[in-house]
Length: 305
Image (cartoon, rainbow, N blue to C red; front, side, top):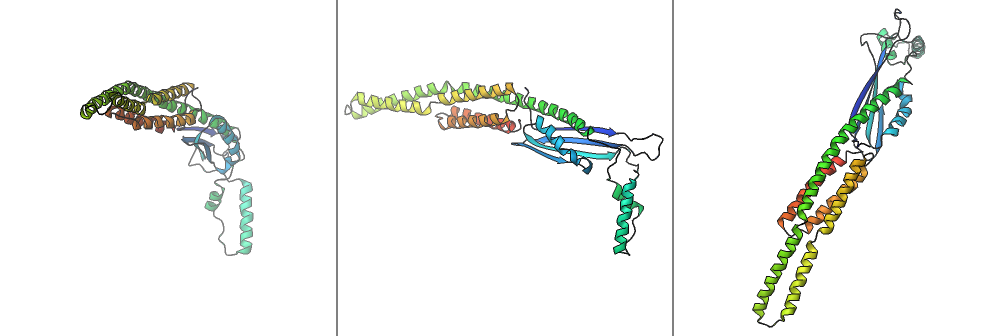
């Protein structure tokens, strides 16, 4: 499976033709349905809908459609209905006009001085009235499927880019780990020689007051303790293991964002330990470079589903 980003955008449009004969001057102008889906990163799947009143009843169907294919992300669905001819006026539905007339009579009965409704008032009140000839129950899910396919394609393209970036950082981290491995034996040997020199100097100063074997044993004990203290073989091994697991997850794809986020935290822990055990400037530099790369990975992993 591919790696999906949680970031994406897609839109789709559908035109609803007017019913009735084309020569009928009273035919209702066609309306165009536009639908947009925006997605950004989130810990969980968070859906929100901004739908006109005509489409409000279709929200459960849209929610079911999205939850079947999306696992994580803050997703916003917007839909809008507008006339394809913005200069055309729709004939107000007769039943709505009758209702307005009845309401006006009731108002005048209580408020005789109230101003009567104008034509502009009636058109404004009827502007958002649903048309009986337009049934979006089948059009909206199909349009949402089209937009969702486009969104998934966009998220897949972005996920492919993120995976390539992470693979590049994995390669750099492996190179840094390879540089650190031979440094530890060199440092241990240098420290052992330093302890032995100190031992010889101490023996010369004591003029035989201290047994040579005891002084040498003490020097070797200190060298061994130093070797144990700076040994980062375990950290390098765990770091390599985490890198292998991240690479495996990127190849596997699917819903891997949370596991990648956990592994990034573990990588950061090993890099910190490596830095704390550092006994040389070069090893400290490697630890810092590792943490910079890991932080770059962390920022991108938070966008993966």
